[in-house]
Amino acid sequence: MRRSPLKRKSKTPVAKLKVKLWELCKQLIRKRDDNVCFICGKGDLAGASWHTGHFLPSAACGAYLRYDLRNLHSSCYHCNINLGGNGAMFYVRLEATYGKKWLAKVFLDKRVIVKADEIFYLKLIEEYTTLLEKTQKQLQAHTKQL
Image (cartoon, rainbow, N blue to C red; front, side):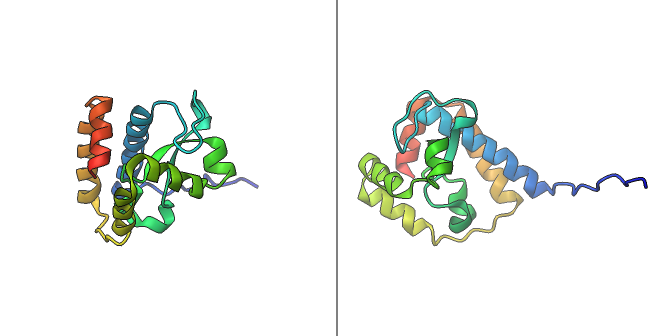
């Protein structure tokens, strides 16, 4: 009996933009946070042990915060996978780093609803591509302003 070749779904234009945007997010976070886990402080992250973790889980925050640099930070494999994001410690670190007002704004932005279409993703890709070209200090300042 001969098997037929697997039929793979072709990626839609929006799906391709999401992949491109996520790659840009990872590059930006790695440039901003160096190679240190934001949550536990472990240094020398590299390869598969270097993750980009969401403070508010991507499944619960919608498109607006899923790719927002405020919601993304470097994390080690242990914190992101084994500890499920280590949310309590993540919260403590965010509050200590950015302050309560900043953190409250992130939680308020969880309510923001956007139309996640090609225009939305293209706009973010353009903004993040420009940010990636800037220095690390400018990137940190941009994250604090958001």
